Image (cartoon, rainbow, N blue to C red):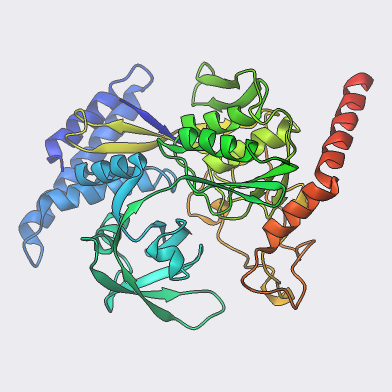
Length: 443
C-alpha cells in the first residue's frame, strides 16, 4: 500500500539500479555511465571494508549511502528503515510514546517544526524554529533524524534534559518527562459567539474529529463565525487535507497534483454540502503551517470561503509517497512524486500561502525582520517554484500586538475573532467575490 504524505547488501543495490538503467527511456551511453558508477561504488565499499582503521558496519554504510542518494534530490525524500516505518504508522494512528514534538534536520542540527498541543514539549515552552542540540548533555548534532528521534522517545514516566538554542536568546536546558502521546488532532471550543476549531495535524483520525468539532460549534445558540486554526500544523496525509477542506466547501476542486509526466495529473473535488452552511470562517496560519495545512488554507482562500489571517505559511508544495519495500520488510521510501496546486492553479512551493490580512503573533523589531523563521525556500535542495512565484520579501508585519499586550493572550486569535464579529470577514469576502465576477464579465 502506498500512502500519499503530502539494510540491503550491495548486490541488491546493483540489481535495483541496473534494472532502472535498462529501462526503455535510458540510452546506451546512460546505461554505461550507471554501470561505471556502480563499479566505483562497489570498489569504494570493498576498500572501506578491508582497509578502514576500525571494523565497519556494512549494513549501516549501505543505509547511509541510500539516504545520501535520496537526500541529493530534495529535503523531503528519504529512506525509512523498518523501525522508522513502524514509528510513522504508529504516529499516523495518533498514539505513541515520547515528547510530542515534530522535528526535522537542517545542516545536521535537529530543528523543531512544531510542538504538538497539550504535550510535554508544548507545556515546557518548546517553540517552532528552536534547535535541539543535546539530550542529557550528549550532543545530537550530526545524528540522523531517526537516531535523534530514538533518543527522545522512551518509556512513559522517564525524564530527559534537552538543550535548546533559540534565535535571539541564550541557550537553555529544558527538563521533560516522557508520556504516552495521544494526539488529539482536532479540538473545538466556543469563545462567546465564535467557534474555534484547532487542527494540530493530519493523521488518520483528523477528519472524524473535525466532524465532531463542527457538530460541537453548530450546537452553540448563537454562532457568529468560526476560526479554523492551522498554525504550527506541519501537515500529514493528503486524503485528510482533502476531507477537511470538503467539510467547509460546497463542491469544487480542492487540490490537484501533477507528477513527472503529463498524464500524471489528479484532481480532487469536494462533495456538495458545506457543513457550516455558509457561516463565515477565518483561517489562521503562520510559518509553521505546512503541506496539508497549506492545501486547506489555499482551497478555502481560492473558493472565497474563508479569509486567511496570520503570517505567510511554510511553502511546502510537494507530495511525498510512502513506498514500502518488500511489503515493508525492508522499510520504505519516502519519495517526492508530485507537486500540488491550489484550485486556482497556484503552486505555493517556496512561496507559501499569503494571508489576506497579515497579523503577527508578537512584536517584531526592525533589526529582526529578515529572520522571522525557517521556510521551505531556506532548505537545501528545495524544489524551485516552476511558476516563478516567490515568497514575499522580509518586511515589517502590517499588524502587530501593541507594546502593552499581555504575553499570555493570543493576539492573532483575538484579531481573527474581532474580524468575524465586526463583519469584516464577510465584507472582504463579498468584495472579493464581486471583483471576481466583474473580471469574469469583462472576459
